[in-house]
Amino acid sequence: MKLLSLFSVLLFSLALLLIPNVPDNVQVQGNHLLVDNSPYYIKGICYHPVPKGQTIRDFQTLDQDLELMKEAGINTIRVYAPIDDIQVLDKIDAAGLKLIVGFGYNQNGVFDILSETYLDYIKKYKDHNAILIWEFGNEYNYHPEWFGGDITNWYNALSTATDLVHELDPNHPVATAHGDLPDKQALQLNPNIDIWGLNVYRWDQPQSVFREWQSICDKPVYLSEAGADSYMKIAKAGFEQGENQYAQAAANGKIIDAVFKESDNNSGIIIFSFTDGLWKAGNPDQQDIGGWAPNSSGVPYDGAPNEEYWGIVDIDRNKKETFEVIKEKFLNFSLDKNN
Image 1 (cartoon, rainbow, N blue to C red):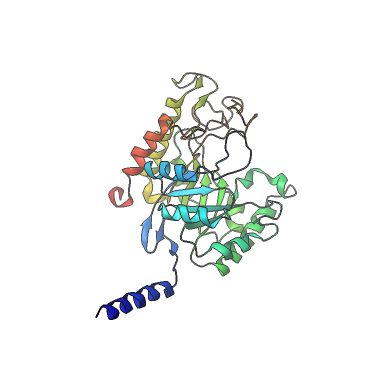
Image 2: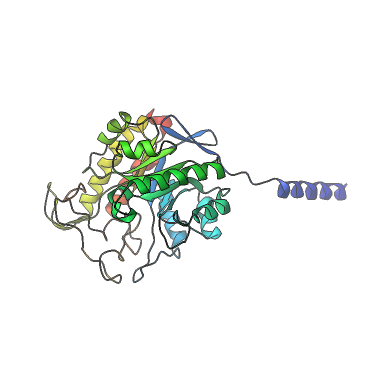
């Protein structure tokens, strides 16, 4: 009897090993994403972890970072370059988070569009359960100089890449991260994009972009970047000059509220960014103010994106004031409760 029981257990274990690993199927329906036919709303964070004193992305703090992300109610990570490390992808999946994987046009032949090596990456990882969306480019519409002075060259390359991915992987949507609202040319040359990401910096009121979007396109849309930094280059809107975590927290709270109120008309929001980037504006061993001139952009509340102060945690993973604001809003939101 015991031998039969042991034999049954062994047979069952062998059967489990032989069952193929079926990845989640991600589709778009109306204004939203479906993951295995269940509604999925992006509550995301941009993630490019470069350690203090370095200039290259490194995942040495991944375990700590994932715990912080889970605590904050984040369900989606957006990366600007593919992660070619199965252990990193497995940890992200085990944490219950999904990835929006970004591909650049010209990354010296490393999984980029120009060399078509992005297809090698997709072939390798398209069945990994961490994958949510394949995303091409990041605000390339602002840089026609990267494409021989003619942005049409980018839109044509994007269209070709989209079609090739659809042939290769029918289980994941293809997106692009566009700088604010695309024009007619961008939309007409890319009819097969499944879902559009928009990097939107309109002070603390991004919701106007959704009404504008509805008038030009019937595809779903998410905010691929939104948020505020924690440095005020000038005193403005009642916020003091200098490092000002309160200003960042106030702006992010209003931005998230505005997006959630329009959740019928969008697929989610990705806050920029997880950690401060000391590599961006000067000496990577220290935090430099940097940034543009005040009142030169739509970044709340000084109009100056101070590049090294965008994190919801600092470089040592100390939580900023905005962390708790994001946590409260992300954990308390669901499509079922708000629709």
